[in-house]
Image (cartoon, rainbow, N blue to C red; front, side):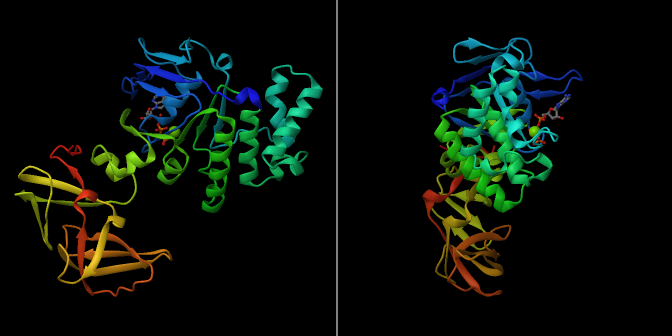
Length: 355
Ligand SMILES: Nc1ncnc2c1ncn2[C@@H]1O[C@H](COP(=O)(O)OP(=O)(O)OP(=O)(O)O)[C@@H](O)[C@H]1O
Ligand SMILES: [Mg+2]
């Protein structure tokens, strides 16, 4: 497997995409993917994730003036078969009439690798993907998770320079998705392959991405590590899209925001209208009357490691708080809310994060 060790870096320069019917799917895009990195493209339906992936694969070409580089090599006009990319899609696109081993070996056969080598490399690959016992099964005799592993094995056996994955786990149930996500994660790290992974599942994005690109309507909204995206979203789109978040809106005077259930101090925003986002886990429930805000428990949901509590009357909308799983709250109970200033995400009037 040593030939996988260093993936190639990828650069997209000024890559705009207009489809034949005039649809502008991507605004001019500049993006660098480091060698060996797993970059996740995350965003709502129609924001341009698949289009970006297909341009990297060579299935679509950017508008005039766009360039795509693999390392130092300009591949902009190269067709897919020259680019040496491996692809895995949501629909496995396996050959139903071939066995597992024949599916996995297919790419090597196309490359005219000799039969003995194919046999050896397929056996190694099946071993690695824990598919050895299924080598002679037909695809129709496999579970969804097994099919997905075959699709992965088939994509990486030819030592692609880049692995492109477009929502590969969406068809699977939650438990299996989580397990395969962990498998993919360790596989990508072991192979050191450059990978671009498309999803609209934020948990998947956080778990897999070295960096995440959050896309909105054909443009990049933010690029950063999972932590940066989660804790310091650049704007209200990213803040709302990633994780659960509470929004407080109100007038600010002397760094204090007035709200229905009290006021928040030490808000580093100018006087006037302002907006604060705050994660459910960054709000502490206190005795009624002792917090910055006061409200009434509207609804609770016990999740085991924590209790989700919705508090009415503190902000404009019910405030979601993640409380300790062992503390019991009852509906109608008055509570206080406490937020630390450094755990507030402050947005200006345009919805852009204040420095
Ligand atoms: N062949 C095409 N011709 C015209 N418009 C297209 C074509 N393919 C995609 N589009 C449009 O380009 C935009 C981006 O599509 P894309 O498939 O990249 O979205 P996506 O982010 O992958 O969405 P999803 O999460 O639903 O898969 C959409 O508005 C889509 O309708
Ligand atoms: Mg898509």
